[in-house]
Image 1: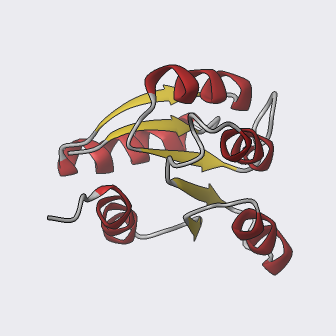
Image 2 (image 1 turned 120 degrees about the horizontal axis):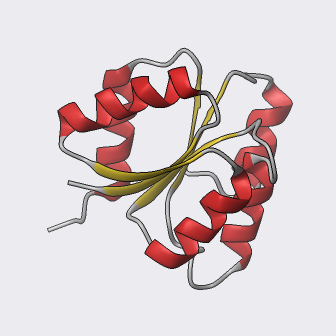
Length: 123
């Protein structure tokens, strides 16, 4: 199972994420702001990160850019989770190195499949 860092400032969305991840057997560290998520990712080197785009402190796109600019975290897959499904936002995330982009509300099954695809190690 994967070790994750989640950056989500909505308590409701965080609870939904945690229920989904718990059912799938994943472990995580949750952060409510971008700057604390960046620090947690740099310290923990998780298997993947789940970033909301609109957050206090640094937004998800700023955290993504900082992760990809740092050689020690550049290889960590990042899944962007956002209510902002605009094409421009998706393009910004993909150009910045996001591994996946899911628009809220997303399917829990789709999220777990995405995590497993990005964190599985080939045999």
